Length: 158
Image (cartoon, rainbow, N blue to C red; front, top):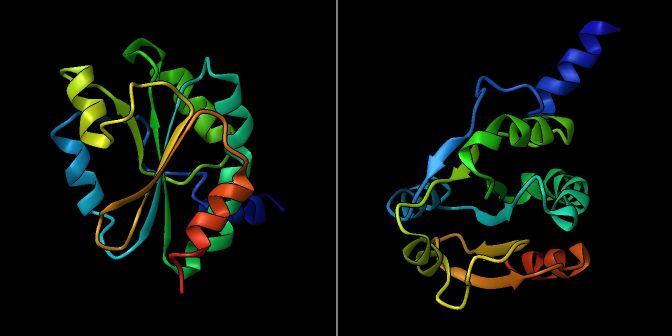
């Protein structure tokens, strides 16, 4: 029984060799997107103190599991302060979020937000959908029903 539980955790990405969040700034954000080229990507900016962010995370994980085989990647970026990184990692593990995990560590917040979306001022939850070429095609600022996210993603998938 223990082996089965371990296998399930490993298969879902809940167990990861990554034990901390990778810093992400205005220079590394576009590089991270390039690593997902060829996939439809949902980038979710969240924080441990953001109640709506934590509430929607299990639904986003389910959506990711449902669409992964069709070329969908779910990327999480914690907006927590670096001192809260262990708490953010714990939330990701509790929700069986697949790695890689990122932590926003901008050198200049305004430049970082503008590099993601010029209309974004940093409020969370914030989610951005990128097409297979890495071009941002939709932005969702504030609480968004997961069904709306799924509808936008489904339009881009085969």
